[in-house]
Image (cartoon, rainbow, N blue to C red; front, side, top):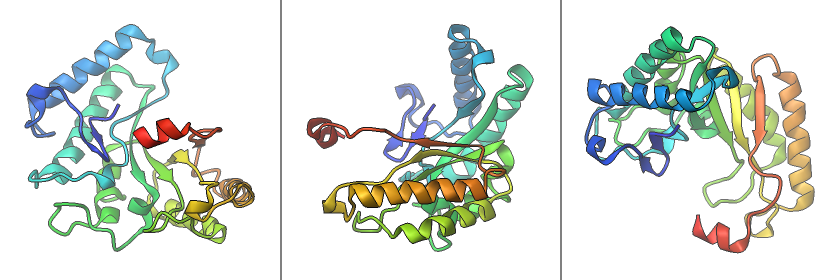
Length: 220
């Protein structure tokens, strides 16, 4: 469930200006969760993710977002523990948001991502942290596969909470500096690194096993 994604805030139009620490928005979020579990059994759900790649979200003029969303997560987790105690709560950030000590969150007044999301930040409000990992540099070129083990080590150092790799992928396109051989080597390194840190990383999901069509890719 993504009330916040890298591309923006996605809530009903009457809540567009509501802060995430407001009772009206939190009450509606809880009602939405109840509705979901009136349609599917909570016994078939192990976890709930609230927000995707949040470190890339541009909060625009909402200077309170980075504090407000921590309260939102905390209140939602209390609600889940009281009503759906077997379901764990998390949020998703990019691997860069977890390991880049220089990354400053947009419109945060200088708040570093690792401070906002780590053990003394949002991590306190959730049961686990979700990560997306695509080894791209600033020019969308693929980074060296030799860095994979280092990235995984930094991820587990970032937080004491369990880490779920929600998306991992590597481009085979030569335009991105990739190839099918490099892609295969990347996933070999991924599984090696996962083996080393299996006790801290319970799950890992490859985003897609086949390429999107050119039309679908251009429409993203």
